[in-house]
Length: 444
Ligand SMILES: [Zn+2]
Image (cartoon, rainbow, N blue to C red; front, side, top):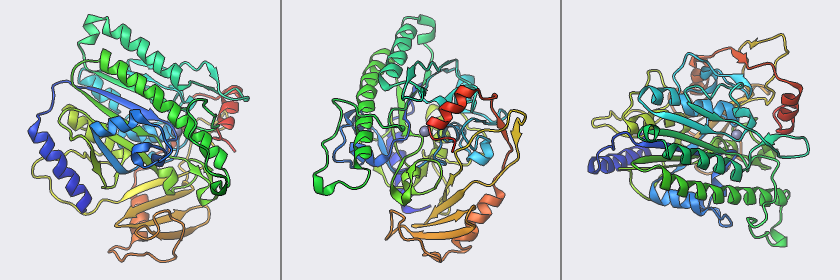
């Protein structure tokens, strides 16, 4: 185990021993689509105005180095809810259905007596696409706003926060339901492109001499982030009021966003850090307040961690691990971390309801301060020495660290041994669906 993970485990252990787990705590998952960690104040963004997220970090544990599995909304959430990488949970692209024979977070909590409710705002999370609604008693997926000229139906932060508030208010008045523990998931999407200028939430414009290519886009993006934080703060106050009792809150993003780095704007098609890195914060009874964890963690760790905190048994064969220690946890080898980049196109012909397994565009592995990246389309493997090149700007042709087995071999072995499933196409997509996917940048 690397020193960071050991320190994390020690920190958790001390805190948990001093405060036993609460009985039947609620679980609140607040997520923001396409949110780069470095656009959040507590992660060091100087021009950000994100007091709600910052306050959550002050009350809990901030994971400085958290990664998603893939820069795509549906597949990334499938990883969050199953602790599996996309080839294994089956939703490798948006609008591909995840397997129905694997346990999901909402289902496991439902079996443990939880009520589960979701409020989503990204079109790709629609229940008839990836199938993320499985296990939820209430899945609010009304899209009633045109986000751009193409007519993409999304929900803005004010609408999604108010919908969740109305539902929480009704639930609080229902004596029978309000006695049950709740798993509440609210997903905000505003930072997703197109980036709108949010009046009243714009950061100061950079001085003329510091304006690099694309600065207006970055500036508008930050205004969307600040806007989401405002509504996240308001929703958090309502939750505080209407959901009494012990409660764990997890905040995260499904993936980041490349803003010109590696000659790319957007997310999903590569495995570099702007896509992979996400903010992740966890707060609740018994957890230390204001702790910053430097150890590398990933969204595949979410399910086992949350289940352990809630006292629910985890299913076997997970690809992540609980970040909560148990006494006598053996110290293993340093844990590698993987990311996948793939084509955006999600569609099959109307006659084809399943697609044979295909290699993604890119896969990568990080271990011991080094990263190996294999590009299937270019048939090329490159390395990065993250200790001197954390922004992955200087590809190397040989590994910067000597490991046995070597770095490249480990990546190949992982990918070879990873259980892979044919993708099933979701419902046959309508012309309108295709238009929406195109405008989101999901179809070339
Ligand atoms: Zn997303």
